[in-house]
Figure (cartoon, rainbow, N blue to C red):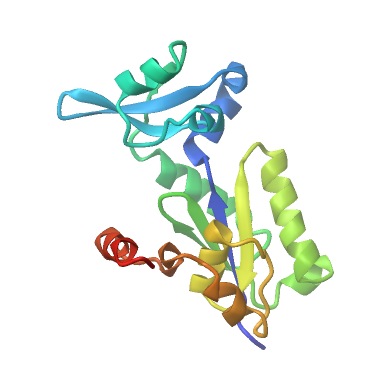
Length: 193
C-alpha cells in the first residue's frame, strides 16, 4: 500500500481562534500585536486587515495609519503550539498519526484511512468541512509525500495529488513550496526563480 499524507494549513490560525472566542471581531479588522525592541509589531492580521495591506511584521502604528479604527489585541505567546496540539488530538478521528507543523499546520498520515470515508476525495472533503464549520480558514492537500502535500496545501490548487499527477503539479509551484530556508529563498528570488 502506497503511503499517503495530508497537510492542513490554517491560514489564519490565531485570528480565527480569537474570532471564535470573541464573535464581535468578525465585523471589523483586527491584528494581534507583540512588543519587540520598544515598538509594537503585527504578529497576525485577520483577513479583513490583510485585504487592506496589513501583514505580520508591520508596525501597529502603520496598521493604524492604514485603518484608523483597527482593533489591536495582545498576542498570546505559544498559542499556535497549544492550538495545533489540540487540533492534532481532534484529528485522530481521521488518522492514527497526526503531527503539528508549526507555525500553522497539521500533518496526517492518511495511509489506509480514506476508504473509511468512501475514498480520498470524500475523506478530504469531510476534514475540510468540519474544520471550516468550526470556524477555521484552511487549505488542505493529500499526496504521496509530506513535502508534496505541504507545498500543494500552501501554494497549489490541486488538493488531491496521485503518484501520476504529483510531479507535474509540483513543477508549477514557487520555490517556497520546497520548504527552504528564508535566506535561500531570497537568493532564488533575486536570481529570478
